[in-house]
Length: 310
Image (cartoon, rainbow, N blue to C red; front, side):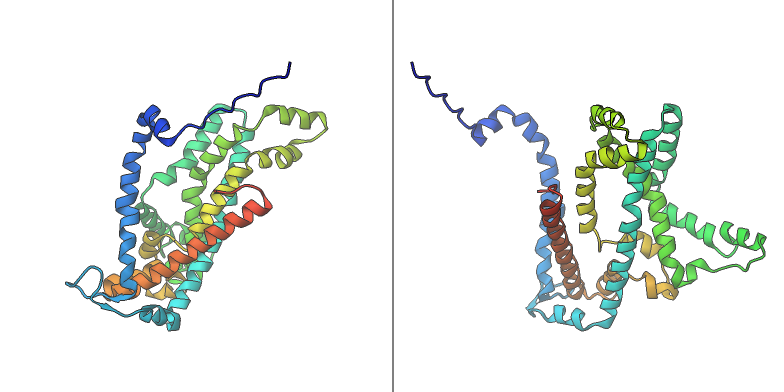
């Protein structure tokens, strides 16, 4: 007797899924409302990049000017100067700050004394909870002419260095403070990802004669690779969004040469000089570059590594 064909299971419709799990879907309602109001709603204001905005007039501009403001910043040498500053500062931050949480997570994963591990984690997490104002205030005190660093330099017979007035020191100060603030907090995701690595893989590697370094290279890093790729793509998307608050509080006219970035330039052009249409055009250009970089990084990752955001 011939076997009867197995009946295919009917796919569940979205109405049936919503009716069954409406409590779970309702949890996403408030985040969706938040993003709709504060993220997607303001995107309508990008229209003033193509219209002339006058204070007191229409919020969408009074006169259509086309690509006039785009041509302005393309021909503006000061914009390209701050664009290069932003690219350099963002690149340095990503190159330095991205691998350090991975390294710290791998080191903490090897610590067997839980008490010591918790102490190190707590100390490394703490700077993340300090406000930017407090961090900048600490930097100003430490790096002032009579601060701790110059006192140490003077103790060894050196001359005091005005760190905050020297443009060549700004990038080092900014990236160093970012490392101090973000590395400890960044290890949380990697430590969570390390818990998902199968212990049997380590046992198999030990049987094959692999030491700790080879186990890390051939087992640990491939195990957390999806997390690494996801965070790398997100960091690439934020490449040009160098921290506005910290730069604004740290920089001064003497350090504009290396410290002035797109966000601070937009602040001066848009709010100080009241040229909001020009600032909107620059902001739209910056956002489009970030979108292209995220899409490109995601495509390259999916083609080469096989892991991507979508």
